[in-house]
Length: 189
Image: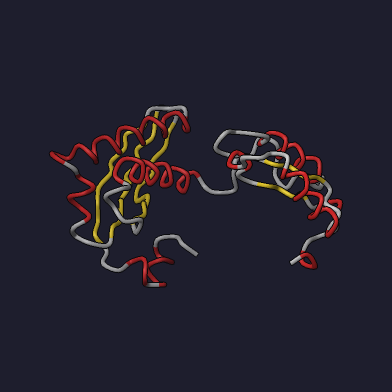
């Protein structure tokens, strides 16, 4: 395994779950053994559960990251179009609100986008694979869909900085996630 590691000045040894050690002094002997085999640039014992030394780890990583010219303009948030971001906002609401009940084989397609100075009108379609997914998404008396649309609309209005009329509906496309042509049609590459 050691031959696969990059040069020593770039390699950090991270020891996880140190909160589970009964005798913390035993860690020193273990670290010395590991350091004898490879000259690590830094050794950082961490515990994610107890939030121990996570900032130290981030600092060690940051000082070793290479500097280069920026790949994007300073004010550019993403290289993805706004339609993609809006679809992902809606999809995030679907999984956050009904994710435990709904399989991850669903996507969102923006079917209509009209934007002007005073606002925007967006029609989005949540595509699922089975007819049985439709009632899960709807919820009792349509409450899931109403909440998904409301929360998504609020986020989209913040993003676009204008009022948004959002229509969200459901379509069933059997087996769409298993067919390459369907994936392409839905914007997946």
